[in-house]
Image 1 (tube, rainbow over the protein chains, first blue to last red):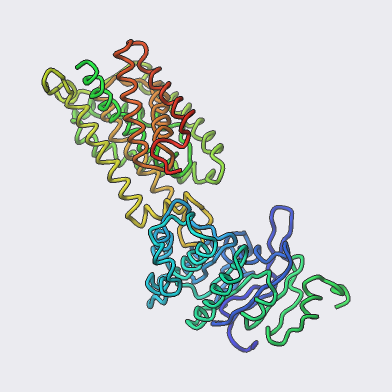
Image 2 (image 1 turned 180 degrees about the vertical axis):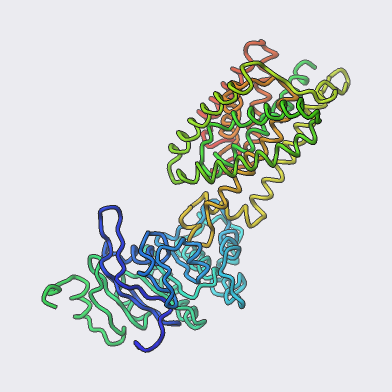
Length: 244
Length: 285
């Protein structure tokens, strides 16, 4: 696993909100086509980590490497051009605009790629309900449908790395299943995915590898198939963290 | 007949306000940036226009071709060097920054042009009128109304049908989400303010042809633009146009009731709308 080249990696990544340090020396890597889960309790720094990767937080240039090039602290629209896209927590759709206009913003500003993997038609095939609702304003949609728009919007940026922040939050179990069924299809196109998830079992099932965070530190890194519940409990809650 | 005449004059007056309201609808209604210097910029452009027409002996049309690009550059610079520094969820910083700009502009204009009122000669167009069954309609106000209507329609289409319009609406709805979708909000905002102020280049020429201009006239123009956008509804480009018509008609009818009542009638209609339909007439909310 360590011999494969990284698509993105972080080296001693530190991030702060003013005086509050949210991330402590985070070392992370993801290979092309890999699905990596990031789990941890509320406030562990998972969302902060994704925001730092996306360029929404100031971080040092050398702390984030994309294909071994230092890109830390780049503007978000530069990160999109490199091939990073994000499904943000809380969906953050463009209110007052139709489903299709939301998606078109992403098409307009997508990564300049020779082959467009994701088209409007393909998004509508992935989520047929969106085609039906394409003229509707996004705030009229259900939570699950809004999440589909948010995922579609991120995919239309033609990402090589997709960041998914709590995409199951507040959704019905049936809808969560529907949305998680789409992830393997996305990974199949060669896109790497980082999923931040509160539901540990779901995260473990959906990923190749996982990291656990606690209070801004990485406390566990493992193949998702190898990890035991005891390992996760220890990394998640920090029991015996001091002696480990 | 008297009231029909008032209605027509009101619509024509509304056309004048609509030109100011258009840029305001874009900046205040869509981008949620308060530009207190909006009216002062109209006055500045009008005074530059008057001086240029005297100095170089050029007519209104070539003046428009000079003033609109100049205004667009002023708008772009205003956004890039001032407003982009204070852009965010809070509209107070933009209010304070442009309030300072407004005072500075007024004093600068006073220094350059003195407090005298001036006007522009338009080679007869400013006083030409058409007689339709006893109602005299000024050619210039009609021209202004037509220009305002075309500009509003064009800007509304731009907002809904173009890449730029979608990016601007997205950035206005959620700046951070727009950025992570690949939009550079600062660039989009700079172009939007260039458009909003660029329109004032045309308004400045019309203003100078239609009325007298002095350096202290800005705030009055500003308040009508604000009222029009709020009457029409935030976020709607046509809302600013409709609000201008309501304001213009209310003032014209008010003037017929009593010459001192016109301006107040406009403000009263504004307050009534604010009290009964605060989201504005055209808003879906």
